[in-house]
Image 1 (cartoon, protein in one colour):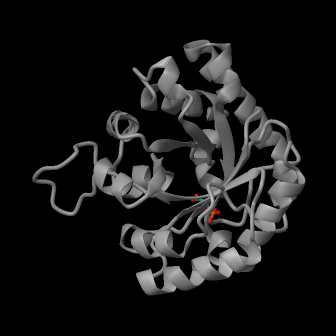
Image 2: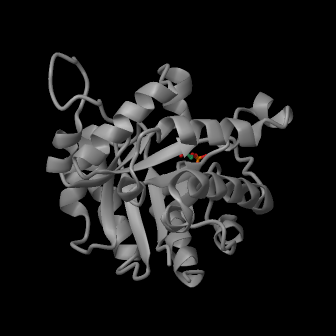
Length: 256
Ligand code: PGA
């Protein structure tokens, strides 16, 4: 059975000092998430402070928001997988639409990053999602399965079990306009089918698929009630500890 996963993507918010305060407030509100795995993804500069403030429970984990595919070298401003692993990261978010759209990331680069993360035992959370215009043209399935296959090209059957997929329709991110649970569930089913086709039925069953895009304390229950949705990637709402704690509580209630 796939364990529920709630990920908070802090994006470019919070200094290291602020991060420690936020994590402490969150851990006061969520003592032990039990069957739910809770992951926070602060900016690089706050990872260390967040790691120190995080409760010492395997149910809580740290994620980075990006990495460079090389281990080290002349890449000014970049951060590598071994550096993140050393800071205590368990996960790394890769291929987020903001990275694709604002920083020119393409599927080939994302695939190199996925390989680098797996090489160092970091679990990648691969984000896929269609733009509003693709959505309107009915191209959602083509776009997301294309991103999935290209991003994960060459990944072995053993490695695929370490991968998490986040379906994040670009038009739903930060807009307050979430997809409907039925829409998201249908795309999740398509993604699971694509995973099974390329890596076998076992992989299709084991890989967790999250929904992201305007998830809030108010609507989280609708998504998490669906057996097709294994968790959530939360942006804006994760910066408010009370809202994030409520989303975690909803995930606990609906845990399978
Ligand atoms: P949002 O962001 O929850 O603010 O829409 C989600 C994300 O970008 O991961």
